[in-house]
Length: 221
Length: 105
Image 1: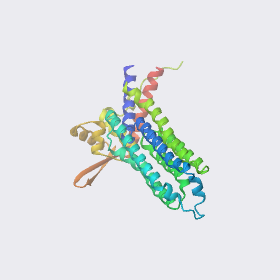
Image 2: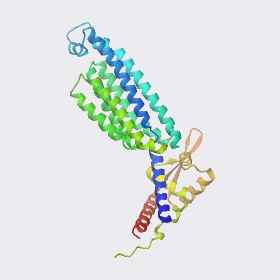
Image 3: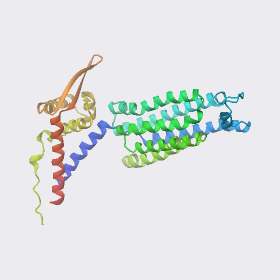
Image 4: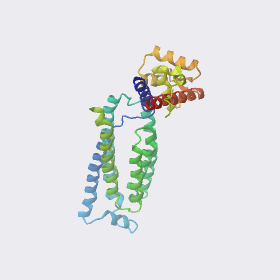
């Protein structure tokens, strides 16, 4: 039986090296939870900005519908800068927290944070997102604000699906969910903030807890 | 009743007997190419040790290397040859057979 055990150990070694050399396994589930919380906080502030308008008797959706009828208030002037600022702060905060937890985890797994595999992962997820960001800016310039939230979800989902080859495979399903959510949102324009908060907030938290429970809790025992 | 198959150790490739050589080949199977430094970090071995095992695999025709430069530093990258990939697959098959053998035996 010892020979049997030896063979199993050898196979385990092979598998571990294949994984560590081709996949960035240090992506922490806690990063997902932190990013999700940031998204929810950001969405809450954004809801406040939009809600303020409601109290003043102005509805964003009305503004959007009236944008060609020559009213003084444009959607751009009304929401543009404030919401854009909130989005930027939310994105930066989420990225920083995701970075922090993954850095902590990479010290445990022994996979370098800035190695070959993490670089490939960054490119895989980064290219769809950067291309998407340019596209969304152009959408906003043309006043199609309703398509921004579904666009965020779609491009982010594509990035995740693309990145799943270079990290723990489960992230693919998070990607599918974001894409499905983005597509649904395309047919329910005007509810973008809710879809956005669900995709970037709730789904991230659910995914993060699942991954933490599966890979990190057991290993830390 | 079927007789227990004798475990056929002769199918195991002696070149892959060593953990480091096995590790190098495992990494090369799933990556198009890997740099010397990445291999060193991945397998956590000394320069002398890694170099001698890389040489061993090269002598068997299992891997090839390419010398390049990043700035002024030399950057050698390694990749598996067709023969190397085939030999590694056969070795995996043999390992699988051994496990099957001990399970039914």
